Amino acid sequence: MGNRLSKIYTRTGDDGTTGLGDGSRTAKDSDRIEALGAIDELNSCIGQVLALEIPDDVDQCLFEVQHTLFDIGGEICIPEFRMVDQDRVDSLETQLDRFNENLEPLKEFILPGGTEAASVCHSARGICRRAERRVHTLARNEDVSDVSRQYLNRLSDLLFVVARYLNKNAGGSDVLWRHDRTRKKFKRNKQGKTNSLAD
Image 1 (cartoon, rainbow, N blue to C red):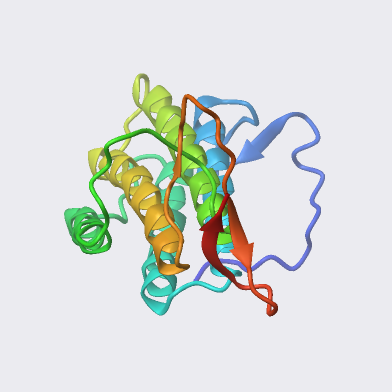
Image 2 (cartoon, rainbow, N blue to C red; image 1 turned 45 degrees about the vertical axis):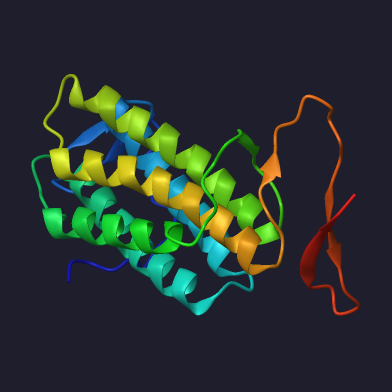
């Protein structure tokens, strides 16, 4: 393990640069730091999902995702460094198929919403798409792992499916985009648990 932080502020970033894992410095708004920041935001949002009451299988899945995102951040932080292999993508696809297998086929567009956990999961999905875009921007000019890019692409799909899974698990359903704009809400029982949809 490298040096641990013993002092939170260093003042070294006051000039608009920040240090990378290889000891070099780059602008705080460089493509590399934009990608790294988006991945950090994504990991933080997934942490919000994990802080809520969710099924154990989702908890374990997203716990593993957080660790992989931290590893991808390590790759971005240290140019040409590799930590994530194809097995991580394969595992994500397996999880995606498992969560999706008992969901109703989509026939309409859905809106982000439903339970609190599902809503935050949709937020994470949107951030994941942004992180993927930032990594692709970085890859135009610098070396970036193809596997990490694949992982982010699959992860946004997984988060979409998990949001649907969370709504179904809570006894509700997807929030559909409708021409008639009929508003439906999740009803809560006396304990504050979300359990069904109501007009």
